[in-house]
Amino acid sequence: MTPKKSIYMPTYQLNVNGKVHSVEASDNTPLLWVLRDELNMVGTKFGCGIAQCGACTVIADGKRINACLVFAFQLEGAEVTTIEGIGEGESLHPLQKAFIERDAFQCGYCTSGQICSGVSLLREMKNEDPSAVTYSQTRHSRALLKEDISERMSGNLCRCGAYPNIVDAITDVIALERQ
Image (cartoon, rainbow, N blue to C red):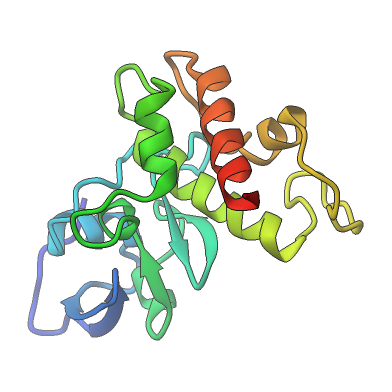
């Protein structure tokens, strides 16, 4: 939980979803709690608190991070995108649409983290970045196989087991982007 505020609480400027917010938080407050408690962006979920489940995945400067383990002050000056900032205005991101079309969620608790991670995966693929999971130094210029997508999404757990549909949704967006 976020510590009680005092007159000695530092203030940070956080750029979240394209808007700069001035927030008060102690140096040991994780980004997750600033997002949820201070900025009322509750789409980012608390799952485990130890970066094992991925429910709190957000994007910082184009890379996925676990908001439960990163202190808010560390992201001062970074561009943070949460699930609330993935789409453009009222329009859904193509991956959000694909999740709906593929029924890539059941209870939905992990969905925001899955989508943020998937959006980052799509960016990694465009940039031909190596996998952060295997630490492979080779670039992926070839088409990603479903096994590659599963590997790259392995930091995000789904207790309902919607993995095949999640992978299919990502595959659909990759195919759309190649048209």
